[in-house]
Length: 182
Image (cartoon, rainbow, N blue to C red; front, side):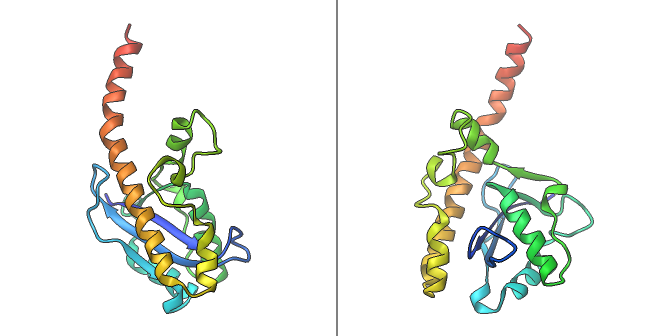
């Protein structure tokens, strides 16, 4: 089984017209910590089609064994919609991350934020420096170093949050089991 942090950056929010500019993924240990290096596929070094094709061919995302590439991320519906539609547009094999095992920490963030969606973004609950709203501007202005710094910060903060949850949640399950037996 391979758990992989997965995220993308795009030129906007609409997969029908906006493009994927980076795909980043990193293998994780079973305790949520880093196992492998952060791979960042960059459209500005080739094209959106090329990074999608590289990701599909090399990651194991479409492996027949459903646990070969278990996506772990924050708000994976966004990645799912973009990867699926953009692959289809480029006539590449379809990427369907939500119909196989995945771990989306967005729900945990919402619960930790008292059930509120507003204020539950990764940048609001971790040390992530900002949301991704500047990325399309940096891309347009060819400020690729800023995009890379943003991606590295986001991955680091996600991994911290993920591994913290792996440490905190199992004892909560045991506590819950004791309470329901009362």
